[in-house]
Image (cartoon, rainbow, N blue to C red):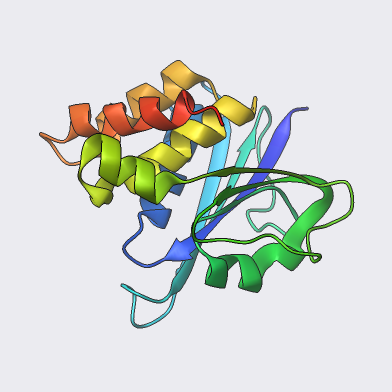
Length: 179
């Protein structure tokens, strides 16, 4: 059975919940696999730390909560600080490299990949609102947990009408990023 536990964390307003929704929809609707998503955010919503737990699996999912994630997608330092202890040994950290600094709390044998998504989004697209789709593209390029074409379909199906092309451009930017 192929199963991937993903924790996505950031600040309210960065698109954390939409990121989880797109990944879950890509797998459950467009790959005919299984997915669950649980979201968590503070009462302030915008500006506070929020989290999305997404499980992607080839088989039915019996328990929807993540104890230790295979992949941790950190949009900022506060989120990294709060949730890094939940990344599995040997897991994968994908992080916004200009807003997050991994440290000695990174689990043993964990891999990490950073992308300056905020700067790239502003420079190449000009609208920070699609920052999260840059991160989704980068995650898709660096894991085998979800198919690129499925993610594109999920983006088109999930984002506000009229923003599909902008969001797909952001996804492609993240997917093609190389240091």
